[in-house]
Amino acid sequence: MISFLKLIRYKNLLMVLLTMVLTKYALLDSIFISIPERNYQFSILIFSVIFIMAGGYIVNDIYDIEIDKINKPNKVFIDNIISKKNAWKVYFLLTSIGLLLGFYLSFFEGTTSNSLYFLLIIFILFVYSKYLKKTFFLGNLAISFCLSMVIYITYVFTSEAIIYSESLEEFVVYKINHHDILGPVLAYSFFAFLTTLVREIIKDIEDINGDLKLNAKTLPIIIGRNRSSMVAIFFTVILLIIIIIILHFFENEVVFISYAIAFIIIPLIYVLFKLLSAEKKKDFSKLSSLMKLIMLFGILSMLLFTIQ
Image (cartoon, rainbow, N blue to C red):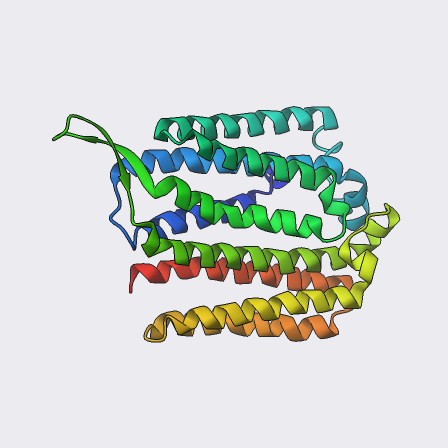
């Protein structure tokens, strides 16, 4: 069981779960009144996304067997704890369950077009694993987009609900004022996108030796380790600038600004300086872990909306 949980990256899935829960109950519900009926739909959404993401991690490992044997030999699960054939079966099972739940939710809400979000995520995760992960920069963009979608898709499916009106004696659609919340949702989505992008570039630098042996065409292999570090620095600076601009709109919120400076801005500045001097694999491994921690602190900042 422990090995299977590691295979589906349970820690990453917990991060996805936390992101969705805080987006719904801390960010969205701080703007509009929560309706109990939406909790049922939200639960279905969580299971759908978690199953699809878990399947994505499995198919990623299926296509990464040879590279993982070089880059992280102690974390190779396919052909060790589960055969490739059975891994494919589990992938199709998890993905199918996630997709069916997504379809059910979309049809239940009367917005069948929203089912395209689930198809899009499944498609990107598969194409990323089979083709894009070993290509120049496209893989980094694809996985970053996928993870940023977690916040946006939570907004899409919880910004309206079908509830029963006793006065009208029929089901009615309840919608929130999108103008009140779209800005923060997009801000957090973009934060997730950029932090993931920087982390993916750092991970590619960390894994350059294994990628080289298998003729991958990742960013560090094409332009070199040092230039890749500069690309990571560039996007980190962009992230810092955007955060500072956003904080301008919270100039009267001392707690929010103090939190952002202590747990996001200062760590990002530290990453900037360490990228200039990082050389060894362990250096980039530490920076990768730090970027994940920064993302966690960024998501946790949603809690501050509940006390403002």
